[in-house]
Each structure stands twice: as C-alpha cells, then as structure tokens.
Amino acid sequence: MKLRQIQYLFSQYHIGKLFKLERIFTEEDVRNYANLIKDFNPIHLDKYAASQSIFKERVVHGMLSASLFSTLVGTNFPGCIYLEQSINFKAPIFLDEQILAQVLIQDIKHTKGRQILKLNTTIEKMDQKIAVTGQATILIN
Amino acid sequence: MKLRQIQYLFSQYHIGKLFKLERIFTEEDVRNYANLIKDFNPIHLDKYAASQSIFKERVVHGMLSASLFSTLVGTNFPGCIYLEQSINFKAPIFLDEQILAQVLIQDIKHTKGRQILKLNTTIEKMDQKIAVTGQATILIN
Picture 1 (cartoon, chains in turn brown, blue):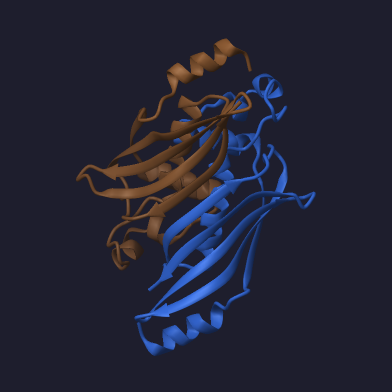
Picture 2 (cartoon, helix red, strand yellow):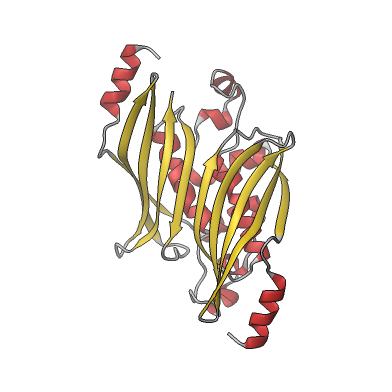
C-alpha cells in the first residue's frame, strides 16, 4: 500500500469515529429474510404464536438486525475484510420498530502496511434501551 | 415449565448432538440480501471489482453465511431465545459454492427450569476448509 493511501485512511479513520444507521424492519423485510435463510420460526412470522411467546409480539430475527453491522462496515470501510463479529442479543427488536445501529472505532493497529480496526457495535431502540451489543474486527489492506 | 416438558427436552438435546444444513448461495440470494440490508459492497455484486480484490471473485456477505446458524438454531430449537453468537470469518465463501453449516451442542446447563445451551457453530467448504467458526448461547424456557 502506498504512503499516500495510508495517510488518507489514517486521516479518514480515527479512534472515536462513529458511524450510524437508522432502520425499521417491516413485515416484508422479515418475510424476505425468512425466505432467504429458510428460518420460518413462528416467533418472527405468526402473530398468534408470537402473542403466546415470552415477547408477546413478533420479533425481528436477531441475525437480521445484526446484519446492520455488516452494512455499516461494508459501506464505511469499502474493500475491508471482515474478520470477527461478536453479538449479544440483549432485548428483542419488534417489527416496524425504529432502531439505530452504531459502529464506533475503538482501536486501530498498524501492521505491515495494513490496519486492524476494533469496532464497538450496538443497536439501540428508540427508548434508548440497548437491543444488541458486540464487537467487530476488520482488516484494511 | 412442566416436568414432562423438561424430560422431553432433555432427551431431545444432549451434549454432542449435531445439526447440519447444506446450502448454496446464488447470485439472486446475494442480491436479495444486499437489497434487504442495503450493503452493496462491490465485492459481493460486481464481477469486475471482485476480480481486482484479494479474493479474485465475488464472495457471499459474511453475515449472510453466518445467518445459517440462526436457521439451524431457529429450526432445531423452536421457541428458544438466542443470547449470543460469535463469528470468526476464516475463509471467503463464493457465490454458487456448496457449504455445510453445523451446530454442535457443546454444553447444557439446567437452571431454574431453563436450559442454557452452548453451541459450536461452523461452516465448512466442500474441500473441508473451515470458512466460518463461532459459538452460540441459547436459552430454552
């Protein structure tokens, strides 16, 4: 990697930089995801079954909401390689609920012309309750 | 939870039990996922851009392949609550490549009529190379 590119990336990415994305997952989104990954768990798709569950209403697939971390990484660090993602599901996200996904640069290591970034990843609900937390590691060549 | 239900679950789930799922992600699947989560990183969608990348061809979004863990959990442990998932992306998965996702029960803890299961989660390529590893924690009420 050329020095100019490294300097550009270094100025673009710094510890403490925050990337945000608001999203609502609709019934159509949840149905599309269920069809795509073949997970038809009624807690996501069936109003009555969900009403009998601990959450009382339909919830978005956890891995669909966590996919927003991939979106934030893919769009803000183009060309990076996604190495790790940990996910803690803290609270359910309901259909049609507005959520805010955030990725915060927590650490940057420079090694052999590459950067390894540690990212804090969270999804917050509108009542500021944290629904999902986790950490990601990405490599920028 | 009633005793009969606990006994049923206990006989159904035991340490060492393995759940498997084979899958191929096609161009249409990758495009649907990109549209769903709004991650249009060219490494997934653009043949030419991908040919210039480290992987040389288009790769499936990491979080789409990891979604198979959610499928295996959702279909084999209906009604469970997904607590945690860690994911290590070890090798790229290419479009139209056959993969095998596996979930292995590693540990079962019984507490207050509930079970907490630790699962080993992997995705293997047809050359037996491990593409994705990780661990999941689920709660069965």
